[in-house]
Length: 115
Image (cartoon, rainbow, N blue to C red):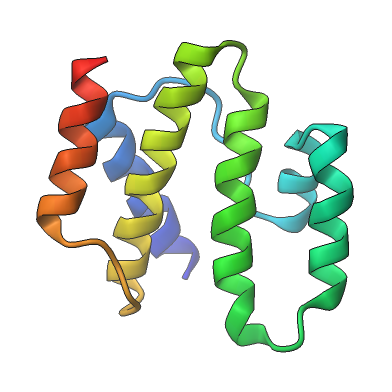
């Protein structure tokens, strides 16, 4: 799975042109990057996870939030969210899970280029 994630991140960087820092998609990496007001919710939700099936969705959601929180300004924040949307969709596709359609990914990329 780690290879699929790294490939998705690299492809999303290329597709969106995102050059910001990429938060590690781990509990520690995400927790460290979140604003304090989000961090408490993150750890509360982590403690409430009932099964491993929801863990990937949990990581995807909070990784996106961590990227947004780590952005130095609003423009980079918007780019980070677009980048995260593409990376998560590409990773889901590679892992055989539900994902955005190619046209939805293209729309995200086109919207990112328009900024």
